[in-house]
Amino acid sequence: MPDLRFTASDLATIAVGLLVVCSGLTATMVVAGADLSPGSSSTADVRPDTTDPRGVYGQSADARNPTAPIEDAYEEPVPEEGDPYFEAAASDGSWISYVNPRDEYRSPYLGDGSGKICVTLLNEDGDPIVGETVPDTSVTIPTSDSIEWHSSADPMTVDFPLTDNYERPLDADQFGTTSELPQGDGYLDSHCIEIHGLPEDGGTVEYGQAQVDGEYADWIDVVGYVQQGPVGDGWDSSVDPIADAESYEEAGGGWTYRPETSHGQVVVVLQLDPPADAYPDQGADNSSENTDDGNESDENTDNSSGNTDGGNEGDENTDGGNTDDSSENTDEELPGFGVLVAVAALVVAALARTRR
Image (cartoon, rainbow, N blue to C red; front, side, top):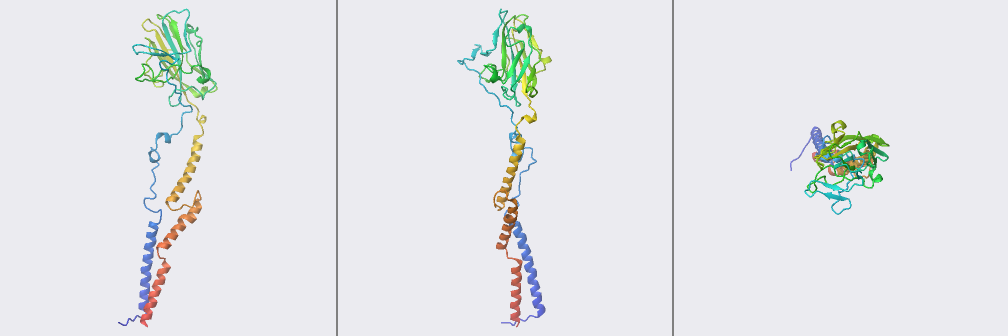
């Protein structure tokens, strides 16, 4: 075996070289350990772009704007044949009629002139309602002397909620269409008075501007008037109560009968427009819920990073979870710098013994 002889300077050079190599290895492994520690994957921090106008994960418009109408739509199907409130339908399918307790005939009967004056109340979404959220509130519509004989006219006053004040809260299907009916969409939407027995040649019906009064008067807007007439004996329901409503002046304020046009109608369109403080405090509730959800999100984030120490103990997660676990993982998987120095010292000692 060759006699290995090393001078003191040789041993020092070897020791320094080993230390340099060990330092490089340690630095490399520390960096690698940091990059590969649990939860530090490059994909772990991918989060939704909350600046997306569709919201987080493309959530629906309802989720982005959760405020619901203050009063839900009132849905009452129209009476079908055989129902006590079903009145008649034209044999040619041109019209359909329902029983209305506010349908009255003039006495003496002066002719075939007939008409209706109606009120429809809509919620913020444009759906018919009965006014449960606006109690002790009413709308008054002045009417002409020609119909003062009608018990619900001179003036016509409608009290809300309809369900608390009338035998038949809604009696007419004035808006919308369906292939199954000659008029209407199959749901009652208006509260009306009906008039019969006016002269069909020169008889008139006039009405004034609607006035809303009562406790919640400032919650209700008069959208406008939808008037049709004088016409034959029907009503074109393929109209929109909001889009087709006109001002009082544009609507006309009444009509005059002619033999071939002996029917007229008008619907006063009202819509809820409550003040902001009338709605449930959804903002505060949602904020609290979001805060709670946020804590849950933190828990989820901690879980994904191996930090499950429980609940909202954020400090404990930081001190005991992520940092300590990472250190334990690093100590278990990667040799420390002190170990490498010890190895280098042993190598130098062995070489020295060989030299002797």
